[in-house]
Image (cartoon, rainbow, N blue to C red; front, side, top):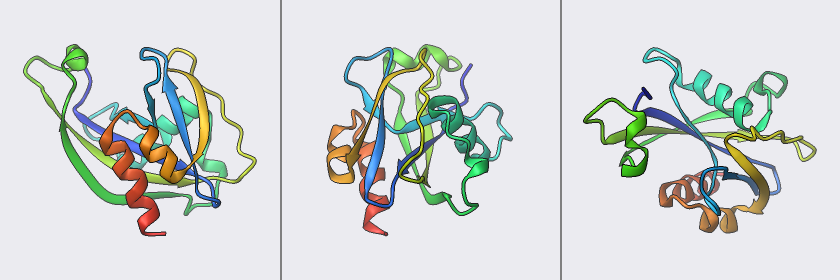
Amino acid sequence: MKIPISVLVVIYKLNGDVLLIERADRNQFWQSVTGSLDAPDEVLAQAASREVFEETGISIEVLPPESLQNMHHQIDYEIYPAWRFRYAPGVTRNTEHWFSLKVPDDIQIRLAPREHVAYQWLPYQDAAKQCFSPSNGEAILKLFSGL
C-alpha cells in the first residue's frame, strides 16, 4: 500500500526551462517528478532524490549540494478515485511536499519506461500550463516567482 505522503520535484535549468514527463498509463498526462514515501520515516529530501533518479536517471549526488531545494510548501489534495486502490482502505487524501532541482543544460534524461514514455523541456510558463495537475502548475509558478 502506498503511503499518502509524497514529493513533487520541479526540475529546471538556469534558462527557465522545466522538465515535464508524460505518464505511461495516461496519454498526454504531463507532470513533474512525483512519488510517495517508501516508508513512514523516509526523509523527504531522500524521497525526492530517489524519485528523481527512478523517473529520470538524474543522480542528485553528482550535482552541486545546493541543487535540490525544499520549497517549504505542502498541499493536501484528494487522491483521484481511479488511483485510490493503491492506498489503504478509506485513504482519500495525500500530502505533497514541493522541491526544486536545478540541473545543468547538458543533463541527460533516462526515463523509467514502465512509468513514463516521453519528456520535454518547456519555458516555465508553458510547462505550468501543460501540467495535468493544477497544483503541479502552481508549484512551477511558485518556484519561478521566487527566483
